[in-house]
Length: 268
Image (cartoon, rainbow, N blue to C red; front, side, top):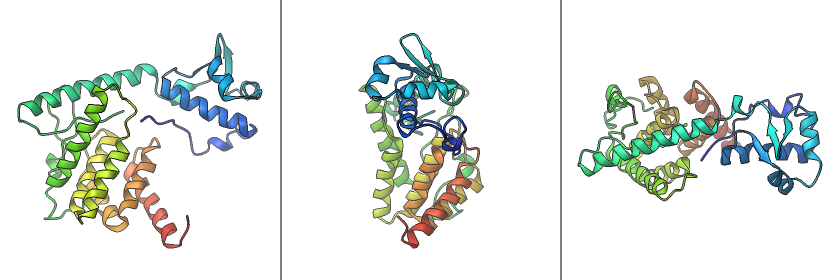
């Protein structure tokens, strides 16, 4: 599943604030279409005519958000904020290659790690066998992939997720949803009161979202969130992952605090 990047202040931007409701909706729909179809901001005329029954394109052009081009419209500055077709294809190629190498290792009974899913902390505890210094080790010098957690139940959950994603890719399905698969496995672990497994799975998920090693403090922070807020922590991480952040975990912690407070106050 892809993400469309929209700034928190988008609705108040001078180019956007004066748009009609239908023009605003059209602009968002166009972003989603281009991101999904990898058109680098190009909106074919046939797609526009199906999406809009008004003269919304004129409003978007006047606002400086679109420009008219042969056979359709172009979202201005699209590639400055959204992933390009070239970048997405490169990321998918890398993912397929990692999956191939992972499955080759699997056939050789040398499974150490599942393949990564894309291009988002346990508090030190003797009951949780995560050794941070080895938590994310590069497989070789060519690329790094995120190893499965050392907690057995979480590792099994990650392997199930990996297999489902691998099967989807082999079937030509690219619109898989990592967060949903993680949530399903997280719920299963939580139903068994396996908090250590929940923490380890969450830590793995964050490392996948950020495509990097987690620091000890970050793993501890995730553990604190999971113990304090339960499933809300996972929802907060998903919300944070939709934003382009340098410190996803700190932002997610603040979101979890807000969501938890809202829940206690009965806010829906």
